[in-house]
Length: 187
Image (tube, rainbow, N blue to C red; front, side):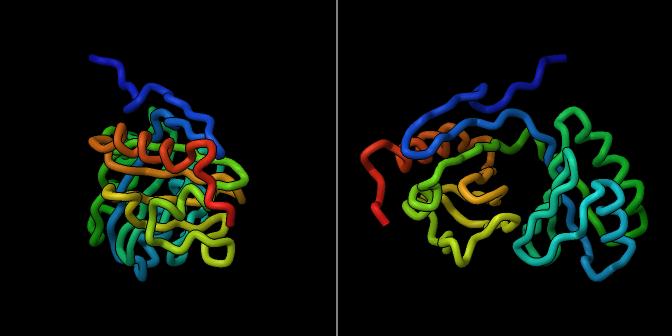
């Protein structure tokens, strides 16, 4: 069996913010009825995290639950545990209106950090990423230039960005260009 590798093998860039390809992360897409107590209980039991509200990310140890849409979540976990976690969750939701899929190998993940992080993001997304609108623990599904992406804020000055693996190289170059030294917006 071949060894899994991330899309850009840990590429990094230091501009007016730092960017790095964050490596392999387990990602489980879960769709279901958020109003069903059995659904929310199964997701929280697997992760140890509280169930997120709209546009929220909830964290617990190696796990996170990200709100993606009114019937979709993304669970982040250790890459090596993703399939076992997806299988366990699917078994726990058997008989429920739910879909569980391990999408780890179909996604790329980037970490972006720095004091002027919001300036770099403002160049790329129509989403409001101002301090008043985008805070730690929040998620935005949006576009960064021409690529679909999800962005979640870990803490002030630190986000993670997920996109389809097929556009990983494009996304990295896009982020680097937005963070090029001398290209600050001066807000």
